Length: 315
Image (cartoon, rainbow, N blue to C red; front, side, top):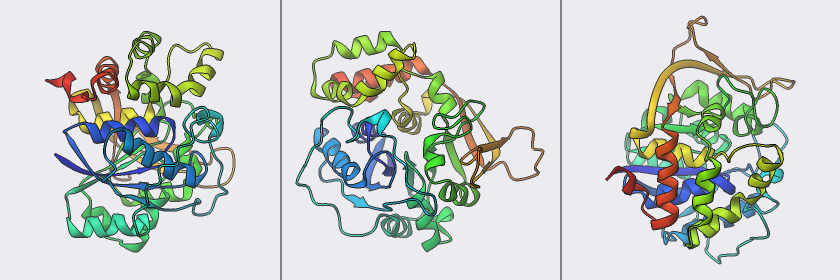
């Protein structure tokens, strides 16, 4: 079982990733760290706690981290996730206390305590990880693996023509992290290629469980936007990243490249430049998941929402 810290800007698909990470027996979620991103910070914290309560995991500590990007002004994604981050009017107040301590410092402390044993699942902007690295320069040697949902590899962006939201939201942090760590990257292009199709959504709509109700609630805004744009289905970027970490069986093609982040102000801010041909001479130290099993990923989500057992797909 892989030990994991989930670093998240909890809204929409982040909640599904967190639920999956808790419910699979392949991962042991030891902490959740919250970073500025999708919606207001305090709402993200409550969203994380509420999600943990839905999957009976309130013993997992939630640490509050960076409330703003390193340099760039903070811009939310409420048009995708709703004002509160959970789609509609759901704004839970759990009464659960946050854990004591600053998230970047907790990341460092846990990795120091168990070198080579903790994997970071980063499904929001990379501010917390950049701050953790600033506190401990040897952090890249102390972690087991770092998985990142972010960037746009051979695809358009989703917040600007050039950039994906998580990298764009704090490009300065992303640049520092991509430069310092060996990452496994799940990018926006892969998320588009593995979207949950309309027939899968119809199956989910027929499931009568609290997790299926929650899924419908948190995805209602993005589903409405997709239907208006004529799209067949919805993406689940963070859920996909968690699933690819937990289930190597879903990975169809993975290759390594040098990846650079453009942190400069302007049209390409947040752009991830992928050196497919090795022209830069820089080390190919970012593993990019280029193809995944979309059908089995859909099955994982269905089993999670239906039976709370995403592992059943592989048994």
